[in-house]
Picture 1 (cartoon, rainbow, N blue to C red):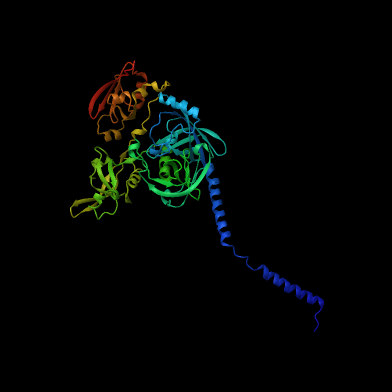
Picture 2: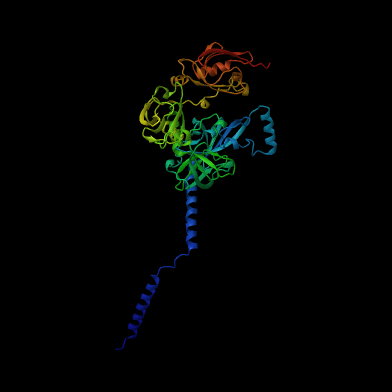
Length: 505
């Protein structure tokens, strides 16, 4: 049978089409390992870019004008033993000029800089306490170029957390993570303004968590109430107060501290603590910290006690109970091991602080306690304690200045005071109800020379009764150390008086 030319052509086209379709259906060649690795690198690169773009709008640059005083060891973004020269970075001629003024005991305005995190769209910003410490003026800059004047809404020195406020609405806010879920080894990205280089982004990893003992207690008068997140993301002066974020763009910590420059050892306040403190500052204007009034040490760090208590796996040993403190009237005893607070296990000093800190002052809480009762063993028990309010002497308000620089009466006296609240009176073990409590005394001040010390209660200045910090400040303004100022006070239960007088005529 003959096949017509048209049929032959159609058959040929059908066969060719089938072959072509078969050819198109064949999978493309597999990528080489090198190509696949590049794709992964590109994805990771894009992830870092997206995090920076996503988080930066909620980061602010904070500029402060402060009084620059002679260098001293403090909690200012570096561990005290590594603190940098405060004049570092100035041109040589200016550095020499300001150094001479400092040596003469003068103060000069200082422009400092840090970073912050927008918490609420209506202008509440989270930062470090040391960023805004002693600030006369604060200016906040946003990524979009807008600038605002800011005011401090509250400071909590032990956690190194502060909240400032700007007059703005509709601001982009940061997303906050649960820092308790942070894992060692995960990516960590720092965003801030190191050395005035605004919106610098550095990345590394979480090197460690729950890092305590970073600051030597002998190097600072402040109590440090946090276990830091450690990171090798490059953090420098100016990063303080800015966010440490994860690969999801969530804030896991507030960058606060570095161990020396260019070491790759930085520390951030966990965001769970920062958020807890900041929210209370926003709503109440301050953070009230509950405490038990006990001296403690982790059982794991107490080998001589641990050997005597083989049945206790973890806990915190009560070494002493503060007289007249919250726990003084409870059944808690020195030598007890606290294993849990309200059912929450506590194996370290910081864990116990974290468990007690947010509790309501004066409201009873239950401690799980192990007590050794004989050579052969002991028993577990539950003990009720009512936490008290912890008062930070370092957070006491400074005496106000009358505009005459360092010659104001308050500065001459060198005294900072706190209101004598019932809670504080109980801590001090006094029944005195009127007066103000001396929170701190400058080392070389007239008050220090006269023997006035923290814990003393000032009841009168120049025969004027004092019952509040405001009255104290007003009396101090009127007084003159040239003429002599009579101060009546109570020290360790003994009524005393001293005349504070400047001997230099």
